[in-house]
Amino acid sequence: MGMVTEKDIRLGKKIKKYRKLAGLTQDQLAEKTKLSTKYIQFIEAGSRKPSLKTIYRLARTLEVKVRDLFPF
Image 1 (spheres, rainbow, N blue to C red):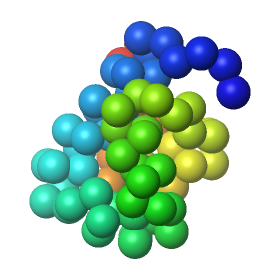
Image 2: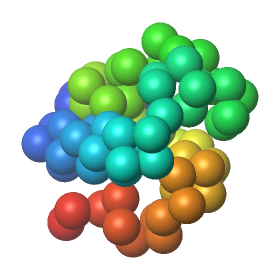
Image 3: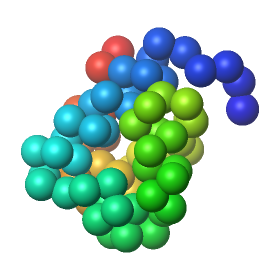
Image 4: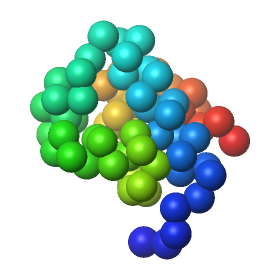
């Protein structure tokens, strides 16, 4: 895992935005994606780089396209 970049932070903000639009708490998103709440918190804060598989899982759960999560 490399250093956290501005892109990681922007991705985290997008995931948080779509989670809130879906009316989900971090706990609910974690449960639906089979990820830990702590990991969701880290992703949203931009302090973890989720794998492509995890990004697909988040997009599917949030009912958005993967490209909607990428601000770059």
